[in-house]
Length: 105
Image 1: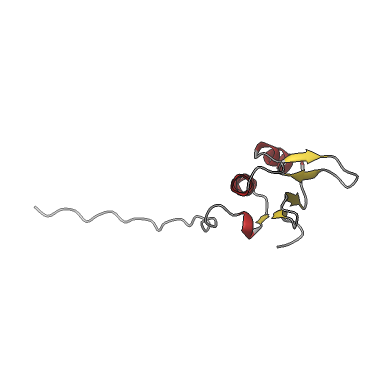
Image 2 (image 1 turned 120 degrees about the vertical axis):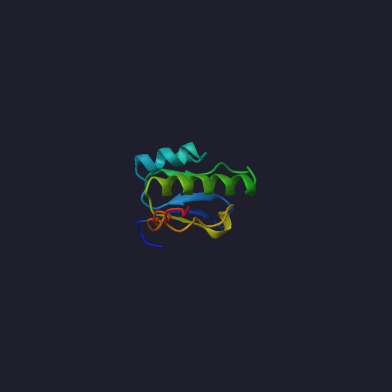
């Protein structure tokens, strides 16, 4: 995990927070996934609402991570938040297919 990654983690108190470089587009995606942004002196504090249950939090965190990755952000999702298997490896083009030999009559 590098410093350029957006990190979605469950903190010691149980709250799910986002840390790292969150630009306006990333913030919009996080808000769409159900995160809240509250202003602080150090910038917005981005977190999920409290008391919604771990399953809901896991689903929202996974959805946010998927949307951010689709938008080409580097995302590190805490292993305790994953509600689905890890993403598939990048698409690799299939080798070109050859034409079938002609039929014999």
